[in-house]
Image (tube, rainbow, N blue to C red):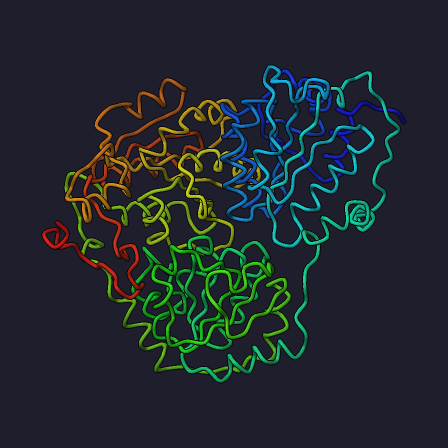
Length: 579
């Protein structure tokens, strides 16, 4: 049958199992939006308040499900407004497909109205991108984009389509994809340049045995789990592996929720704001088993002193990560789920009583601020624990970036995978609310709590319009400490308390802003008030904003100062020492 390019887009999206798209229309993409209107029963389009919100929503959809999230925008500023969201997904290996439309090919390169070389702009922050100049290439390009986004190490793919390719008068014979196995033919069509983004290596039996021997011979091993555990759906394999061999599990920010926080083997987060238990375990281990992690500078700090006395076993799907930041004594390149499944039968059960006794002792060393109960503000630890008490293990938690993000990672007892949605690599303020929208649409029977800082929430509060319009039962908790907290922390400790451009002693009044959007809102200035209003908000199953007062000088501790070893942690502050 002959159909237009815009119809091809719809048919290919349906073919790929897409049921939800987040986006914002404009002139160059109108032909596709016209087809979306006609096909509204097949694909649901969610209109966000801003294109960046659409990109973050697609990302939240992807992270919470493991499926490919989809967003779209028009040319020029519409396309560039997607860029931060695409970069966020790229840094955290989240599979999204972004579809943009451009001016007609005859207008390209002429500074035409709303023209931008979005492929050139996004080349460094996509796994791959395409400009489709011929309608004959459109269907296979879309299919290849989805295949690339979800295969190997996942990531974002952008497809840019000049307007005449989607013109209703420009028709082509469309052949539906009969089998998904036809992806091999796509590989041949786009090979050899794209072969690397499809292929996944498999370690040999001898390599697997060598890794098992290294693990079995260690006395004080530690697992450093990264986001790859979640991405490869290897959380069960991680649990079986760690519990069989009695190996403590430290987690990167992206791996929080990969291992049950309540399990005695879990030492929670490692690195700059990691726990004493995680940082000391990595420091004193004799074997560091690194699973799907990239040795971020936020974890390493002083790389020369990181796990100094340990051998390092690095397992990752991406060969480019091997040796990039830290040299490994042994590495395995392959899908983490498959590799752990092969390792598990070869790993010996060991009690490791002395090692676990050390771990247990380190777990008890926490900053004194943890137990502080302020009368005129709320302890962040209480906020996280109270949210969990009411919302339970199955709730999804999204965050922005800043102190509230670190408090959530430090205090929230995550129990299930894919329930913590946050920006790690890029550290994107403005991520959490859009991500909450995508997560809620992806999990309509689930509940989403968005924990935001007042600084970050200024960047995306326009998405309250989206939340209200679709009546999403998202509870947004604004940690309102009147400052850009993470930056203020550094200014407090290392810049003589010169709080340059970090104090937010001006509006808005969050409850009044929420009311303007028709959303319920509450204020809480102490623990009792917060407990009361959060329980009420969560029970209502309606959109809600809670303005939670936190002291401006509440600190994120422990903290490793920049350039120090991860065992050199600040556990409490003697301010005079940092002047």
